[in-house]
Length: 122
Image (cartoon, one colour):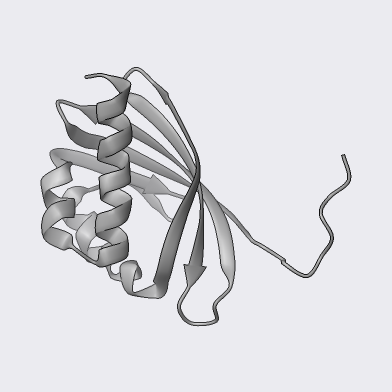
């Protein structure tokens, strides 16, 4: 699998989550898919759709800021916006793709973005 395929597969999952298109998401995830986050430890595909997929209703949109790939792996840094209060936040996710299917996602929760502060000094 080339990096273009990994990148496209990852982008398609983000788009499916944002559009709440579970059918496309199910097709993108391998049968033995695992999902981890600070709240989830290698849960199955079925558990992911039960526990995590409903969060798609809580996210207004995603903006992928960076997508780095190496072989069949990718890291994505993105900004999303909560529907409840409009607050934007940043997260990072690790993906492993095999045979055109996402085998693993590991989410690293970030922080809320404060927009009324001046940029950090370099």
